Length: 275
Image (cartoon, rainbow, N blue to C red; front, side):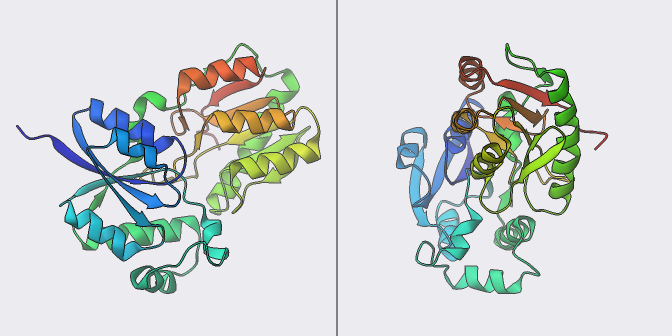
């Protein structure tokens, strides 16, 4: 019986590698379409087939997917939207330009849903990321030796309401708070830059909250954290990271929790049903 085949559209970071590894364990033959220059070329080692396409070349991406006769694909890894505003970093092809001009706005959801529709026109189905990363989902509860203090639990609850609010507006997924005040809201700059900005303003003791958007489409933009985020938190002396349980991903979970313990950072998974 032939192996199932999965196309992996890979952006920045460790998440594409984790997903490729898990998909292969599940019996998939994995073909990686790496977005150049974002994706790490070392992904080639964990792919059955590998090719590169310039980020922004939507027509080129679809052409590559069709060349491998792919019908099921998944997206993993960060593609910074800031590339749209840094001239010279990205040159969209004609199909990408047509898509951008057709959208009502350039919010994350509008762009990603537009890309999804373009794939569907070609008979290509975008699957949920978490289908292949269930082992990396954030569990509920305190995951580290350090527990949040009483005041930090209040900051977490306060921050969750704010984070869900900005998610509802499709602004970002992360907020930094301290003493029931918002220090930073993530926008186009991304999670780590928001933590640096908010943590610097807060001084020691900031609390970082990262959640999925209300009605999050789990095919893309699933909130994820890795060890680099912990190091950014340590740099600004932030001490608590709260993640939405079962709707966010911790990359290399065991090593992540071990490093959080080493850095004396509390990590907690929270259900957000009431928000």
